Length: 92
Image (tube, rainbow, N blue to C red):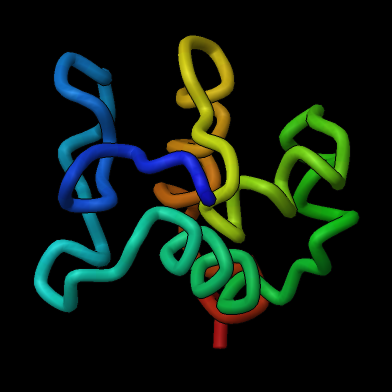
């Protein structure tokens, strides 16, 4: 059974995030948010993991809601969720 972030599928209480929760309105779980953001940015799972400095298997488990990032890893997940559009999309 996958590890739950919390009853709502969100961050545990006390986690320091930017306050932006792109999935709050739709009820997306963290893994769904990560997949959506990564694909929006045009990144493969392997490339996103490399940029975050985590093993691709770690990111895959986050995306499947099998594991939850904690501590410094939670901050890395936040970086992915808070990332803006690719530079090419901003200049278009």
